[in-house]
Image 1 (spheres, one colour):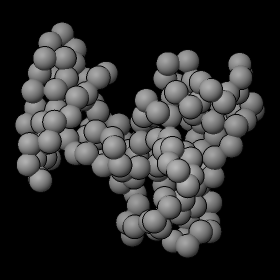
Image 2 (image 1 turned 45 degrees about the vertical axis):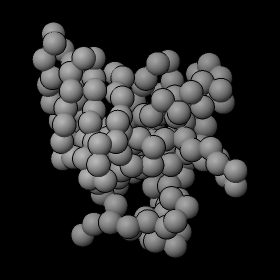
Image 3 (image 1 turned 180 degrees about the vertical axis):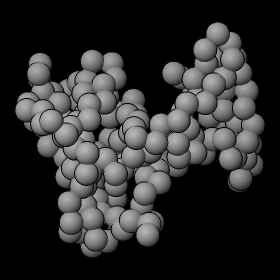
Length: 163
């Protein structure tokens, strides 16, 4: 799935997906360098028609995330994403490379890489996008566009949940 983004005005963006133009700030948004759909919706082009698919119990993987996972994971390894108490906002993300899957794990695969999230952690990040950002002062995986998060710290490693 390939999206192109063109800035039209401060509040409106235009998305193009395989020759189809969608003009709406409610349908697409641009945040942290990612083109994202509203929480719960993934857009796909199937037989030249745009369909909406509910993704309430999923996380999406950005291209930068997939690329970085190809670089750091060997065969049989995957990235484990967990949410635990702590950080400056109440909850924090924890990332580790792992080889063992548990019974309550949910596996998200894309382009030959896998990300695993346990059932409890998925409740805190479902609908978000796992991204890899590379900056001068730090490079890290991060969850962006998390619909479960009310606010987060400036570095993106911790968040508070909506009540």
